[in-house]
Image (cartoon, rainbow, N blue to C red; front, top):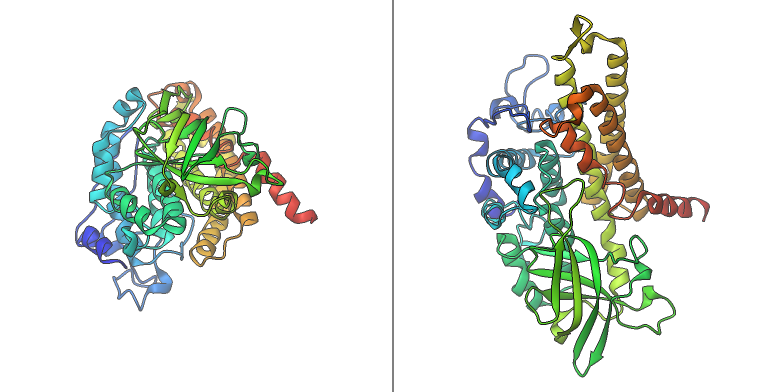
Length: 447
């Protein structure tokens, strides 16, 4: 594991991780001595000897007793403890204010950078942490377990930074990646347009050559991190005469403050209230040759290569959110009384909980397989599409059923299930709508 990660996480296992339960975040707690135990005696054993009997993670499995997750190693468990403490101590206490502001603070980005939680799987020699994608999965899951949807760390670290790391020049690496890992610069990616959502070939934003420079015109909408972003990857048409838009798309790095680049209003969404989502406008924005990311007219290829990770991210957060909602609901029905007893004693509630848990366990098994494949560089676009479609669809079913079991109180914003319910609704939409996912899956089947 990279030295930077070791520095950040050293000593995590040497102390108990204490996280206070709250109405927004009820997380189990475990000490380092609970990480490895012999099944027969329960006594702590050496990691190597007991690897086959590993518990799921250090400080909490997946919030559910769904069996051993064998994709993580000890270093991931250490990292999870650090990530969990960060969400509980640095984000959760401030999240209500973030929701009112429509964005998180710059300070929380800097703190995330200081603790090694950004740029996790960007190579160390390029200014990142240099860990594998499972470290990112830990962050995705812990964000969902905290029920704090505001910080756009995942998009920044696992969608924007990989484009720069893989396709950028050395100058672009040096200019952006170290600052993005430190939280000093925030990244966004602008694909969606008012008239082009999941259809990337319908992009109308364009860039034309003017000498050595590029002149960028167009608009984008629904851009996560768009308001706060210091650098935005913009998808634009550069060859309108190409035989298809897929052969004429390029990517550009547009920095905040450049003349002609304007940010519109922060969009007022029904959910993800603390996550800034913006409109972006480009009016004769002059960009130097160094703003081109990768090769001219190769943008569509780059997008297709990187979308599987984005869809896997959405899927894993969907399953983790489902786990969170299940635990919130299980705790609630064991306390809520009706007809002289807790509603958890009603067969209807028991059967519904049984159905939900089974669905989540099936989903988690599939997602862990996808995570392992991706960590090995073997996750294909078709499988990522299945994961995104299935997990986000499940997340919404779980949200509806769990809110229903809360009764009228589930409709009150003070209850975590209400926030989780509205936040879940966007999951089948962004990253490519679930209808598009089915089209991609079906195309692979029939062809």
